Image (cartoon, chains in turn purple, yellow):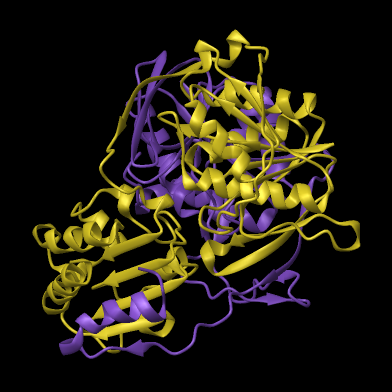
Length: 245
Length: 323
């Protein structure tokens, strides 16, 4: 079995988001980058499925060399090798195309991604990769079992779940619950330094989307407090003043 | 040229988010001096189909083939893309629902189109460009994304645009798309859905609780408050991590992002990761015994007090308010 896992390099979750150059660029000064939290679930699941010599896990990232520490973190939790497609990840369409082009050169059973990235909040890459490869995609999964030929997957839907069966290659985007995120141990961190990290050049493709500018949400006014002993009054306020109930 | 909107059905009905997508697509069609076509896949009641006209669709393509009765991501994407081509649609709108998140990217690739997912406003056509505002950085910012492809795909966030009645004469056409057997690699075996609960991503009102509740056994009052309001229940990350509540209820940066009209946070301190997932709520109410809780800084209304004293008072007040 061979599993390809896509990971994204994103600002740490505690980052205060600011912009430079007239709000056209994300301000990366002083920002720590991490493996996208959703993308930690995908390699953890892949490693779990391959445990006991059942297969190998290859991590794929589209990005420039500053992403290498993030890629090494995924190797540290137990992936076997990594590929970095050397290009600025300008939009989801571009990233998905690069991953699909690489996947076409590989034998694989499944491709796992995170459900979305916490920076641009796209949940586009997984389904786009699948479409470029013309294989099924299952978005926002919570459970995955694989018997060697058929995968049984729980997909999240509004108010419940769908149980899906898929035979043959597929792409799935993983949400919380799919696997317990693995934490790298010292041995993993040491061995990650010497695991293969192949760098391949990107395949050109026309641009379809680009961010023109950013803005931060307007600040809210000061909180209006209701004394605890008059808690009931809050219901009147929400009804008459805020008009939300 | 036209605008196409995909109208997702659940058990033969359309949810509010679908009528929002139709209202939104109609507003785009008006600015482009063109008409709005809807595409419906699966079995939907006739009276429900008529409602599409209420929000401005002038034509609906109905696909009722048995093979696509249930949602199959790949097959539905093929049908929507084929309809977009046969209608010469230059803009395709979907809801950014769980299914929409799986469909929109596939439709975009089939149409070699750029996609904005999580759109919150109508496109801006200034200077002949096509720029859509969307959420980014988990609610900490918005990005104005330009689509430069010939065809554009937009997935609209629920509760961002609202519904707008705009009655149009609705022509109903049966549509028979090409059904490819290769589109059925993944099949739905079972659907498990709690029908008696308000689903979180669609909810207009949300009652959420955190570690301040001390244990899962104390969620009774949270559920009672939510039921009285007709709200969905949610929780913070530590609560779902401790298995007090299911992961599907976890809102925040690594859970789901929501933008209800009212978000009531009880016993949640307001870590930056939690705030990211809920900050686009229209009204935020915070109940916390710690007056220094960071959540109060982004709240509209608040009560500094113990949840175990305050929540029962709210329940009583709601009961008498309703009675």
